[in-house]
Length: 384
Ligand code: GTP
Image 1 (cartoon, rainbow, N blue to C red):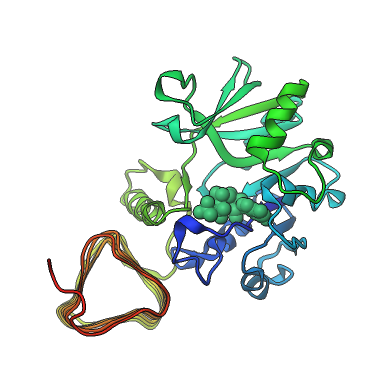
Image 2: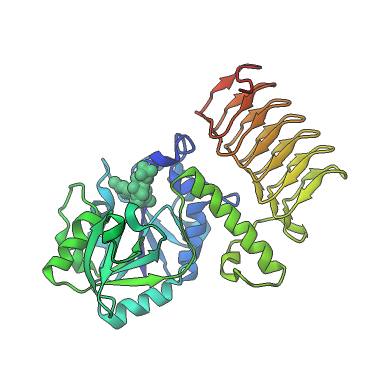
């Protein structure tokens, strides 16, 4: 089975985390999301994957190469300029000669791909769109179906009183190659607004596959943080035996579980009086100094240093972050190599991009965003 992963978007909503890193490469529990996706595809019998890149393609190519290390054959279609979701798949059409999967490269889900494929074949669909249910469909493209699941129409961002369905496009499709004939070659075009409505209008069988699997669009800082909370809390409760959210425990943190809900990578040094509140996952070679508090749900990348008396609470830290003594970080995202000085506070919703330096005595209130390389001198931002 073959698949195309759409991974060319600029990830504007996730800036500045995506200023130097394409969105599919952002770490999920310390491994690039794309790596996790590719491993999952392999488990489901997908042996060949075209990664449709456009933004910062070298970052992906240099990491995964021909896929040998992952056991999946990888191909990189050339996309001189962004061709859109459908245009990018059309660009690979000559290599697709049987039913194949398409994945948005920014959706975290534990969807059972085998079931989707069976559904597609049973219905003799030409296109199957996986659907997820949302509370408020007004911000999405809603899919309306008949009782058999055949798609009747698509409604883009319906007003609340006109939303007849809460099922929305989940960004995973099974397509028969012949539908690609209806996508214009070499032009920008999108599945949601282009190919799918056209197929329905032409009477081609397009089906919706309603899925209750876990589903999260990683495309915003809030969702990116949330997926970690869900994974860690799900994983912890599974391990605790409740099995409430067993499916979510499919992704476990790396490292050794030293107590329930506490995963520690190789070579970490944690002072004996540190308070570790599960669930927490520490990458390899982290150092946590005396009196510090590491409060979950929290993830720390490799080689982070948390200074004496610092408090890191509900945060997501990438690799090599340095947190100074008595600093306090709360429910924020801190990218690779950031240095946070002594006594600094970083509030909920803050995003510190790679290489940021915040010298001592700064107080970053809720939602402050610092772009790559920003250097805040001591005491530049004080409490209001
Ligand atoms: P924002 O800029 O934050 O809206 O994100 P995005 O454009 O990266 O993602 P969006 O949700 O709009 O797109 C869904 C998926 O399709 C993402 O995985 C994108 O990487 C991918 N994608 C969007 N446009 C293109 C494109 O022109 N070419 C390719 N190859 N992939 C695309």
